[in-house]
Length: 602
Image (tube, rainbow, N blue to C red; front, side, top):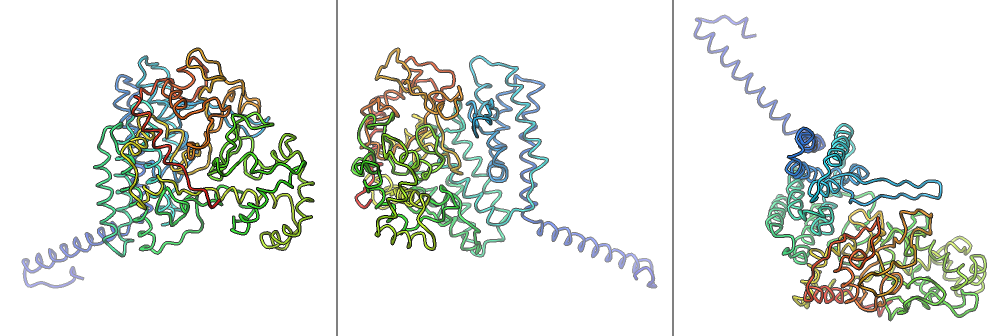
């Protein structure tokens, strides 16, 4: 329109045209600003992810032309891998697992015809190769190629379109939990012990991702509290690995962050479609309300209810279910002994009776993991001629004859006949209730009392740090079920001896998990048990070879089986001595004793 307007002189024309150009530029700038402000959160997350993963790839690829820079480039690449860890570990669990797996042979056994044996690769393997005393350049370059190619595959295929707000919140909390339970223990930095620095990197990345959601906060102070809390966590992580106070970090930071996370959920008015392993409203990692017990059981059998637990408890103590009417579940799992029997090897079986406390919080059962559920484990007990010596059909008949049982089953399992499946599920439901989290340690870390000694706190910090116990016995359950996903219960080859020898020992004759599928690489592997309540569950190990916690700590301090002369190819325990002094050993034992629960009500 301006072009068709007549002007009195050129100056007027120039003024109008200039004004038009200024207005046009201003409108254009506003338009660009509006576009910047409305970039979807998913796009912002993807852009950040692509930027970080690209840098991780670049540092790895630059090593191919100059392997002398491998150490420096590894550290830089690893840093950017840690930046993408919160996203990758949620969106692509399998590829994250490949990139962050330990340098241990991976064996997948589905059945006798489907056994896969895979050599490990990834950042942990690279760390061990690059920082070894004698470097294998060929191996280093091979693993760099494998890791780089996997990262490129992830970069090209990771999709952010489906991410909803609750996905982000789960992802965010999962990273907080990982830092507390594996990040600060050295779990995935076995050589350099660089885990505290890496945890700082993860926190910084979480702060970046949270900034994309700034507009979601109705209460701006919650967002400010997050920035302050993350900033203070990063400052407190600036310690040497062996000096770091893990107890107070979890107590003062992780638990505070879980509370802040719940405030964020309420502020954003987010509803979750279901619960994962950790309950959606958990504010502590060390509580009977932390875990979603049903996550660890077969969802087809229904939820665990108080009625099922009560019924299961009665069945648990009933000797009438066995063939000779003399044996019940409680015969080998005595409450006063933390549901063990106090014997080296229980009568009629070949292994030490493990505690049933916290048995629900694992993904496999028996020392060799031959059962995939508590219900499956119970079948073996029922049919074992040295235990119940009966069968499922007879078990059903015995229960159906008891009018008290028939009435209880109608309440717990309405509108159906009593079956052996429901009988086993009821017993399993009682066992699933045996996770009290009410020990002295739990009460202290949850601020219910302040009674831990400095030695006990030091013991926890050593357990999770210098002694490296927590890289296999993961807090808060202190068994081998790996946080934060809790999808796998680990088995280990640590070299348990036949006798209490400390020099030239011989390996236990029990081949452990080998018996399940006859996989040679599984010989002498056993499931990692909980160390909760071990103060009253002696003797220890699958064969009861050690009578005291001092003997157990001495075994580990020497470097496990390797340190006492047992040299096995697939040993998962590092062979190096821990170099713990006597005071440190005493502190660890003092801590372990704080994990004794009050089980009077069970």
